[in-house]
Image (cartoon, rainbow, N blue to C red; front, side, top):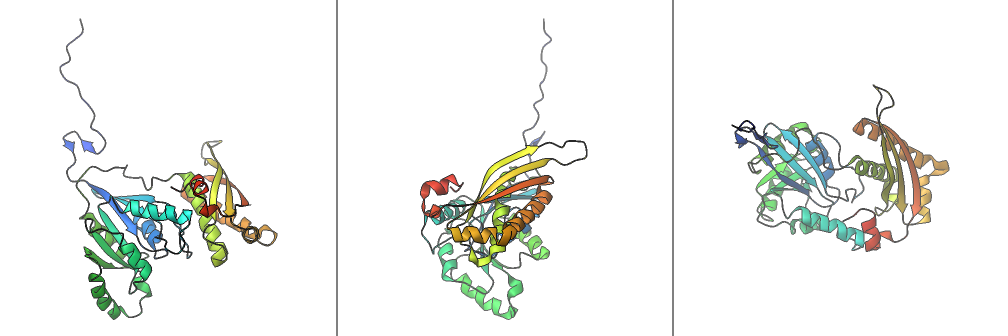
Length: 322
């Protein structure tokens, strides 16, 4: 006869201790929204503490909803970077990007509405109209370091108060660590008390494959400037991981990617004289990815022309856009 079971111990679920859920933990979603090129991705990277979203001076650099996490003390901040809301061209790509923005602001605990300090354009206005009154919204007056006369900010903030019922106003620079630290304190009180959603050391829900494609696209835009249309994109054809050959060595990532452009002239521009530009795009991507992934990287790049892809709903989806 088996011995009777006097007791059974069930380990606590993630985010709980033996006494039950931890009531002191906070966790919530914070959406970062704004028109193209106001510094949303720079802000996300600063908040996470590591680069997870690509940046460039070209508008529409960010094309996907990118989630970044940062756990400080008992609070876990889950930040969502969104594409800049696009109104200039109503093609299939932009409709996909705008759908991503609208979806991101509909179910969050807090919205950070990013504008350039001292400026409010019709493009800013169109993004602001997307924001409902039911979710607290903090006005982030970014790039404060570019404002020469700080005295001009006070009257500008007064005009902004009349445009929307902002919960708070935060003039700051995403490149200033003290401003970032202050922003965490502001965001924290809007997040609900609940268990964390991610492990304490997680930084993003995006894969290394995704990061590789984004880094290629970042270098592509940075090294071609305004010459290359923003509709150019990058598709990962192969992503293979090999374990270290010997103890003490790093794993190896073998990646093949295709840069997709609209015209033959754009292809020549990407390749450059004697292939110098595409070599530089590959080298800079590989070097940065090796640091971020802590791995050795073997990267192959190709360039293909796919005319009109940004107007083709099916092709936009096949290239990974929602």
